[in-house]
Image (cartoon, rainbow, N blue to C red; front, side, top):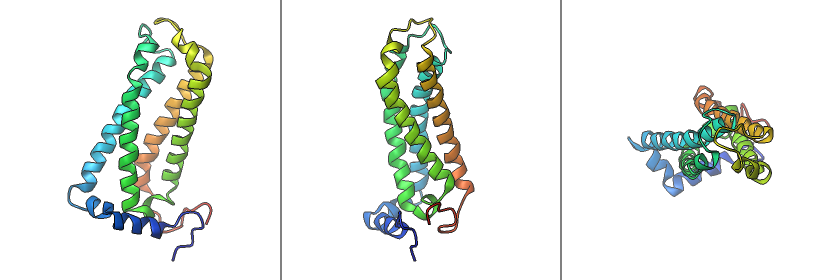
Length: 176
């Protein structure tokens, strides 16, 4: 019986079965391959965006921010890989994710990171492109870089902690 007024876990599980995702992911190699691609996507994303954030915080001076920014599309590709594989996990075992506090915090941090990125490009990016290779970016840009770095570290931490919470249905649901 589904008592969640927001997310119908039973319907998500049924969609996962009907679409074939559950069948694919529960094969001998389905979940491990998806986990591997999830990790590769995360490495691409954090390896590029994290490096850019660290440079904005003043590390690796001598590296032009504009040049380093050319790696960010690879990070976005990694993010797309991670989102895709993450959806496979949720569709396969929605009861283990959709009411899991670590998963909900992870989604919130991802949303905050995306909003932070959008604000960075709207507010601070132009001044960052004018920064010399040995210069410290403006304080506003450093704030965006620090927040991005903290969000993505939190996303990775929550991703690992998800497995520590195997909640019974609706035990952790904040709105049920």
